[in-house]
Image (tube, rainbow, N blue to C red):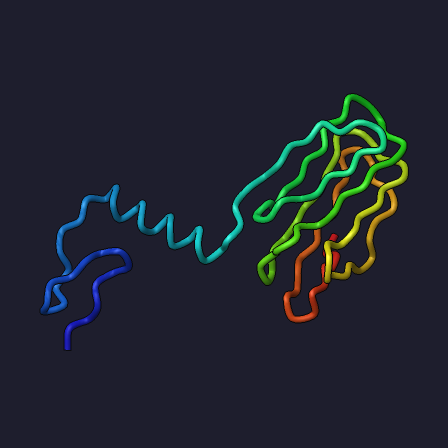
Length: 136
């Protein structure tokens, strides 16, 4: 019995691996990893007082960079998260009254009500319960 070739390497009819340029193999591997994880992006926003930011799908890091401290703002979690999606939020300045809301059909546990400068929080999404659970 012939062992299968390594991931991304094509094989002939006997199962023997064929020579593949490393760039093609890397491209296939990156596409596979991106598909499996289904999240890869970060977002940097410069909100003003009273902001409302809806985190887009595939965003795992949201960094707020306001010009100064903010009295209030709202963050809405992604609408179509994959199971286990992490979302980390931090700010360079404080947000005194923060609302972190789930999206339609979701719930959120232990939502913060304020955000200190340089301090963040992290959630992960459980698809079975449609709930965001706070880790930090």
